[in-house]
Image (cartoon, rainbow over all chains, first blue to last red; front, side, top):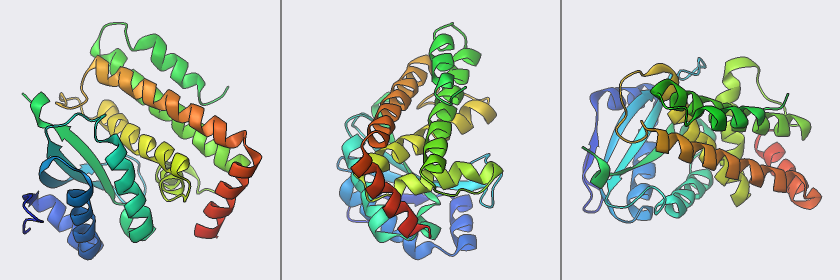
Length: 109
Length: 139
């Protein structure tokens, strides 16, 4: 996936396959672009899937793993803005698959 | 019994000292908030699907609300859901939230979200606006 602005975006093969199966590439592209604009201090973004273990029709979440040098608390307000963006711009059928997560790279071993 | 009673249980066990206890705290914090949110929606006359689909459907009705406080409750529930899934099913360590302190944070987040939910429920005007918005999105 091409970089959005100057922020590298990487996608796992499993996430790419899941996006194709769901047919939501356009929505994902918009969501990633919004995340790079709204979540200040992001260094890179990784798209990956995680099992929900919720036994409904959709077994995976598409995680927008947003990496930066800020704490989870510091980005909470920006996360709220992203959720507002999602509610205003993505239909439920698309937005339901997307969960952003902030990773403070300073804490990673 | 009420769903929030599970938050008391989370608080009781999170500091006992072993990984199974703080993993359990994640699980109970999530269910405390999920069940209270579910029961609030049902009391407000919002229909929900049965069984396992209720997890996603409760979160979506909150995160797609026009009310910013309700959306924030949904955001918290999304975060807790992710942590609950890991705590329950993935026995490998997690670099981001695999710790007692992260479990304590989850309890704090659930408590804050419950307080917000209670405030909305106790304000007739705000509650009516929230209900009308949800019904408009999910007729």
